[in-house]
Image 1 (cartoon, helix red, strand yellow):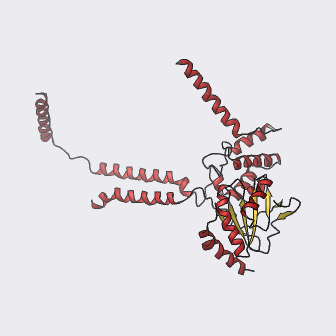
Image 2 (tube, each protein chain N blue to C red; image 1 turned 120 degrees about the horizontal axis):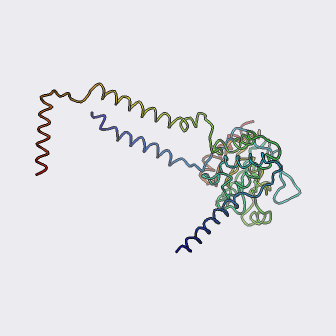
Image 3 (cartoon, helix red, strand yellow; image 1 turned 90 degrees about the vertical axis):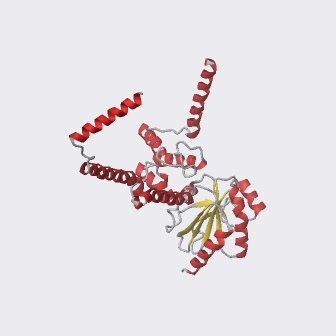
Amino acid sequence: MKLRALLPLIGFLALVVLLAYGLTNDPKKIPSPLIGKAAPQFELPTVLRPGKKISNKDFQGKVALFNVWASWCGACRDEHPILVKYARQHKTTIYGLNYKDQRSEAIRWLKVFGNPYIASAYDVIGNTGIDWGVYGVPETFLVDKKGIIRFKQIGPITEKILYKEIHPLIQKLEKES
Amino acid sequence: MKQIHKILTVILLSLTCLNSLAAINIYQFDDPVKKERFYKLIDELRCTVCQNQTIAASNAGLAKDLRNKVYTMIQQGKTDEEIKTFMVERFTDFILYKPPVNNTTFLLWAGPVILMCIAFIFLLVNIRKRISNPAVEVDELEHERIQTLLAHEKENNND
């Protein structure tokens, strides 16, 4: 009899747990199916020098950050100074993927806000974006020496994410052969 | 009043037209089967930016790119399965409006059936209980007494 009286409470608590789980999960964050897989192939001209091409061969043998950005992207502006600072402090290879942008705007953006990238691939159609499963800019991939994607950040990188998650992972990956 | 009603209807109807026109660019097909496949496919793929819309319904840039991708892949002679696999490899099962049955989606698919089974078992147990413990039996004498009591009650109420 006593247990019966408690049933609604138990039901309620179960519901609370379920809803709390649902609420703390961000449905906007789709886990990348590419983690642990080889980075998709691409070959694109760079933003600054249209005649020069970059492809993922450029960052093979290195641990590289591949940051998807665009001059029209508001959150990129928040993230950018963090990347600029990080590029200055550490020797990490950072490449950019300039996503569906105008070249002149992109160049101006790099001049005004600084250029942390060794080079940025210019993906005006967004095909490379699709291949990499990009659906919200900014996004950042961490590719290991063998060209395998090990981490993906959806949305802007914050200092906390960079120094608590990404940087330790980079150091770990640097030690791998 | 009627006039206003008419005008409003026209405006609303034209708005719905605009909406569907804006979402889908005009794609040219030489083969009606391909056309049908295209429109079916874009109606089954979710826009990952605006997650409650299909890529057919969404105006987001990515939805447009994905529509173009589906179009090119169809023109290249890729099958529906190949196109869906291509999308899933990049955006996970999430991109399918109808997710496949696997470990993570098992509860989603089986949940309602499981809940219904539980409810059904609950119902059966309760019915059985009622059958095995029928209501208190009354003999004839008591039955008469109840009747008189009820009749009495009725008279009282009528007063």
